[in-house]
Length: 342
Image (cartoon, rainbow, N blue to C red):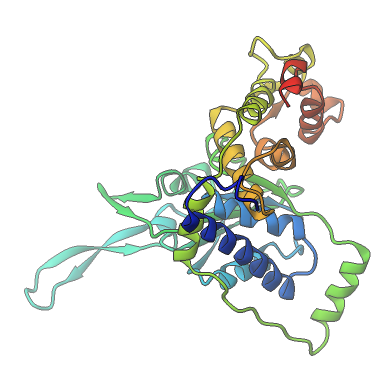
């Protein structure tokens, strides 16, 4: 990281250096428990630095829950897990007012019993197995970092993250996440199968007497400080226009969108996509030792930021065209005017 890149105070520069070292240690600790999945772990760390939430999709048995719990331990954060089921109620997430007798006065008072959402890192396991009414209990917490129960609003402790999982192949007994809730997630991360060598390593680690533990290397206070540092990373004008061109070109009703977009995309990403891809790109840049955002940062994060914000048409689905295919084409066909700026 050069002095020219860091045009802020030496204090901010020191914080940036500490952030890079902390991220390296976190990933090193997680790798003691989780085999492979380096890109997924990096995206989770980026989301945390960008003060965002993650939706992880993958078949059972890919260590999604283990990865999240290990990340919480490494960051020394309070951790809660909710198993989403069809009979789960909103109060099971947020908490509820209960009647308790005051031993001093003998009067009965309403006392708020906090739910599992009052934590630093919340794992919403199989979030699509509960009805929309219960899913919506997370909306206020995810957006405003607060919860309202019985007319009273309670602040959540910082940092606060929701890391949700869902099984992409099993549809029976599931409820599709409302688009408004999907949009609250910074990333939609695809957790894929490990390689053959990684799977062999998993067998060795989990079927023998080998044991591994992780050590906390950062604290919640550190993370809040790092989140402020990330926002100091400058965004060059030409990269900002690249983001605008990318997101706006994915909207079928935009005057600049291509004919194939109007045929293949039913609904495109909103302004939140621009905001979140920029924040995530700032976090990625600083993690890679740079204090400026490049087009490479945007392209690297376009898939997890946009794949849950683009709704394909029936034509696209009938032709077997995935959302990732659409994003790849968008990246390839950014208007020439934008490319000249880059």
